[in-house]
Length: 199
Image 1 (cartoon, rainbow, N blue to C red):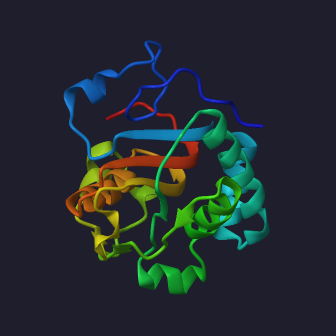
Image 2: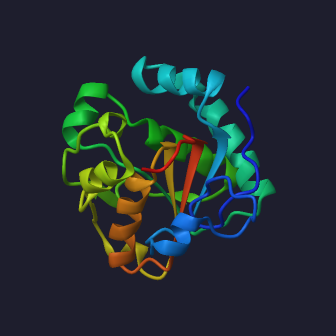
């Protein structure tokens, strides 16, 4: 099993011994109020996500959501609505399903929350984040990639669901669209978190 994450930066969710803000979050503003992840993205968790995301092993969604729901409840996370990170229509046709939407639907049932998979739409067919070498490139890749499709976000606390957080650029872009639409608070919540040196 992958490692459980140690004390975290209260905003970005990266390991931070102080348990307050990391140096990066002291320097930059963010549309995300916080990011939380259950596991480090390594070992069996990395393998499972790969099977889930690229090999059509959709049956493990409920198990993954189970780990997420336990973390969500035990750590007192809250929100009014779950919103999965959307795929662009072209990518969705290629893959046949959105793994984040499956996780959000299973998680919604397990924590008794509403979910809206259509609240945020991906309007740019961005390249895969795994192919972007640096945090800066990932941020540029995701700029203005999403649009909030209705007024449902206004005044609400939104939990954005994804399978893995790497640089946080995808979650940040989703949060930006939601905040522009009037969301009160946006939490990014993922099964796993890639831990690497910022560049």
